Each structure stands twice: as C-alpha cells, then as structure tokens.
Image (cartoon, rainbow, N blue to C red):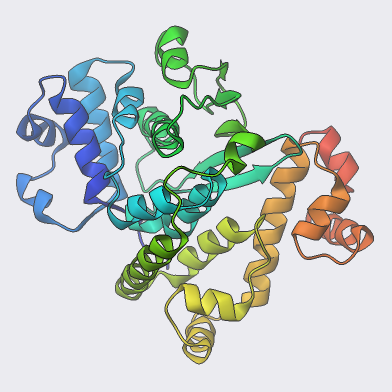
Length: 338
C-alpha cells in the first residue's frame, strides 16, 4: 500500500508568506482551508493539507497570479539543507540533479525529470497529488520557484527558452511573461521549462565541491530517516531512479547508499516488498525513454547509450517490448495513442 505524499513546512511557509504579503493573516487562511492552527507545529503535512491551503489562498486573494508570485519569492534559504547544496553545486544542471535526488526533503508531492536535448533540455514537473486534485497555482508556483532560484544561484537574469503548463491560463498572458520572460504555452502534454544547455552547464559563482559534499551527507542522512519513518520505500525508489536516469545508470549498490542502507538491508527491504531492483530499473528506463523519444529530437543512439544499452539495436528491441512501436514511429506520433 502506497502512503500519502507529504510536504515539508518550508513549502507551507512559502504559501503562508505569499498570502501575508497580500494582507491575509495565516489564521484566516487556515480557517478557510479547514486546517487547525496547531498543525503548524507538525514537521510535515499530508499533501492534501497544502492543496487545501493553495485553494483557500486563491479563493480569498482572488489573485490569478498567486502561485506565480509565491514561487517568485523563493530564495537561498527557502529549502533548508537542500538550498545549501544547490548554492554550492558546480552547475545549474548539477543543482537540478540535487533537487531530483533530495526532492522529498522539500515535498514528495511531485518529482522533476530532465529530458536532455542537443541544444536545450526540458525540466519537467510530474505532480503526485493525494485524494484532492492539485490546484493549478501549485504547479505554477513550482515552475516559478525553479526560475527564481536558478536566477539566484547563477547570479544572472536567466531566462528559459520556453515555459508550458498542462492546464489553461489562470490570468492574462503578460503576468506569465513577467515571471518567465519567455514564450508560455498552456494545455500541453506536461508542465515544464526548456533551458539552454549553455545556461545549464555554465559554472556557478558559488560552486564549492567540498561544501556541497558535506551538505549532501547531511541531506542523505535526513532522507534515510524520512524513508524509514514513512516506510514508503517503493515510491521513493521509483522517484530516485527516475531522477538518476539521464545522468547515469544507477546500480543496486549506489541505490542502497543513497537510501542510507547496506546492500544486504536494501535487498531485504525489497524482498519484503516482493519487488525486484532490476524490474524497477527497467520500468524507470521505459518511462525516461518514452519521454525523451517523444519530446526531443535527440539521436536514438545517444538515448540508448545514456540508458546503459551497449548498442542502438538493443535499445530498439527493448523499446518495442515496452511500447509495441519502434522509436521512430513513437516519435512521429508524439508518444500518443499507445
């Protein structure tokens, strides 16, 4: 049984802070959302709690740009130890990989995926909602926060090449362009940002490999504790595998280390869940391959190599097994109708 997603209080504070800047007291917002004030003392909230908070904030402020504004306020100290790793990473691409790895310390109400192309790469956000459907303000806040933090760590006016959302526009287009400073599309297959590879791979001004390693040790320890407390190893492992693909093909030992376990303990936990690491990795490779094939023009041989296939022909056979279509056919139909 999969446990409900949860969110850290740092993200809760982002919503409360944005509402306060519009004159809305936290008590009034919580009351409208049906959430007791005492819940502010919790270490984490169920994802449905913060969805209620987003909905209440949108209703009470009547601000179509509430999510965009909330995300734009994200800064260097917004996400505890994860923020410190981001600041000391070597490049923006590496920073995003850190978010993927330690996303759950902020929220496991969604995950990021990097789809690399020859000149630019998509950063895709996949929401993981609870019983309540996400407010579109939540999705807009996430992508707005990515842009805000990226501008801070790069010390530049970084602009995405394109932004897009799976939902319809909530307000005037100029509100979106003011935040993203690029073309913005709606009602698309996924929500994400397209960033130039040169921007992603430019060295960051505060890069410090030694400091980043120290902070990563702290974050890994916290993630291990959180994993043990929730008992939801299967979901966390799927998300972790998805985050690693495109950078490297993660082995079982690497996965065990990332979750703060010995290989023996890791194997025992998976056995208790009646799961195979090989099967989970294969499923993650399928999802990643489908996204990259459908939404980029990246060469199939390059995709094959990045996913650990020795030859393009081996990748083609695996792709046909996954989708019943050749990669070229799948790309022509944009991944639909499968």
